[in-house]
Image (tube, rainbow, N blue to C red):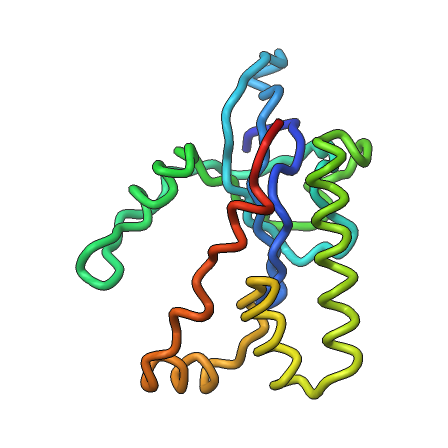
Length: 176
């Protein structure tokens, strides 16, 4: 196992009792010594609700290279992550191997944007049916993880899946 310390650099996505996010690595433990590092890693862990953008965390995990598999005969997962500057995936098997050290260690403007997005998602989810809420959250906020499979299939079959394109990403991933 490897120990890594860093700051969450994306909005954690919870799906199927798992959470995934990009971590801006700061330190790694090799043997008994901590060494400074820089770069991004994709973290996949058991669902943990108290994680948010800009949280400083320490985790113990297995690291591995992203798998190489093609999607739609064009894109492969390893190249997709490499394009985002991610070359390693950390897999945390148990929740006790991931601990929050501090909050709000990132860009305050991005933090504020993610907080607003989270509040809007909660308002929509609390006031609409599951299906209507998941569709609205996918279209307006880009939160596609709660969209039921049958709704995705309908959008693909009708040629309207492009409305779920992640154009919002530019808004929520800028850095100053």
